[in-house]
Length: 334
Image (cartoon, rainbow, N blue to C red; front, side, top):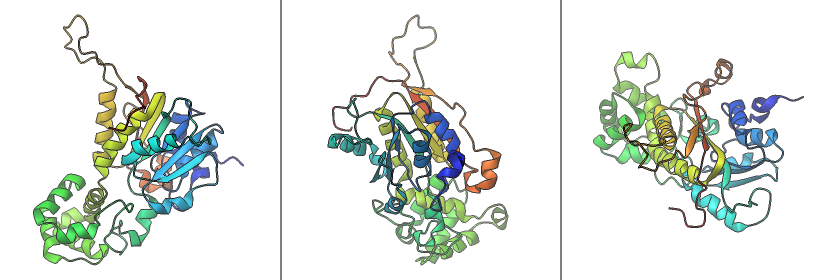
């Protein structure tokens, strides 16, 4: 029985978000090479492969645990890598010239599409030993992969109060950042996520604890800082735009405003045309749009998906088509 892309792609490791919308957007390139830059449990990759027998996928994930989820499909190639290094990974793969279905390209290196599903995977959030969850007691780690050089414990136990407050305010958008940072410094060192969550809760007014757990934003901020997520996103987006051929598509699913703001601004900038003043008789700036917006206001998961998967409620999907010109793929990455 055909269960459709969504149900067919789910795994206990990670429940992918907005699978049907992703498949629909990439339907315009049914026989191309798509980079799944955040493989996770492989749900999106499985759905994309299932939707088109002529498609191939290059899957990346910085978490080595994801390798256990790779399906036995010759059309899929998996690489343990941070999507911040997408440019180099694609360049190295094409240089192999192995001739298999996942790497053979007539154009020498451009891909047909790139997908980013940002944030931590369900596996990472649910595994107390990874230290991502403020609801499960575990070590203060939060590293998505071995390429992260600092753990959450390194930050909360060593940084001065002012630097901690800056991280919490910037990456968590937490208005009580200074109070929380001072409380953390006064109680360290910490052994577990539970200890940290309790100190955070005690540092904020009671009214702020009634709506959502006060540790949610702080844990988000620490995770972003530990994994350098926003910088990685900026680098990954630029690499995706550079490496995607004209007519190809880029899809990004974000889960909080900091990620989405980066994506929205970069896509809007790429979709902008002539910037000359309106009273100029002819264009003198020479600017031409490199992207076409496919979801101008962003797409949201359906109420049915949110009911079945509450973690999808904050997701917003943005997508563009690359207009060109074809990238210069002969040189080294910038």
